[in-house]
Length: 98
Image (cartoon, rainbow, N blue to C red; front, side, top):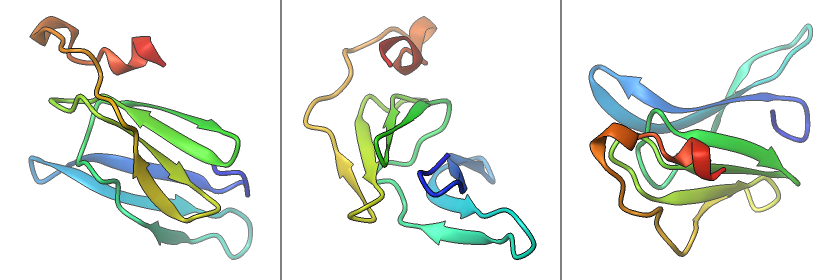
C-alpha cells in the first residue's frame, strides 16, 4: 500500500518474461489504475515492504539487487549493494533478509 491508500502492483511475469512495470490502484467511486515509474530491474518472486513513504523491493528470480521507490521523488533508487550470492535452492532469499 502506498501512503495515500493506493494499492501498488509491482513487477511479475508477462508472456514468460520478467517485467519491471508498476501500477497503482485507487479505490472508491472513481477507482482506477495509474502507471508508476518502472523498477530499475525486471523481477518476480521478490519481497517488498512499504515504509515511510517508500516501497523497498529486494531479490527475486535471478535478481540479487534491491531498490526503493520514493513516493516523494516519484522514482526508483537502486540500493548500493546486492544481496549475497545464494544457491538455486534459496532463490527467494530476499524475503528472509527483509
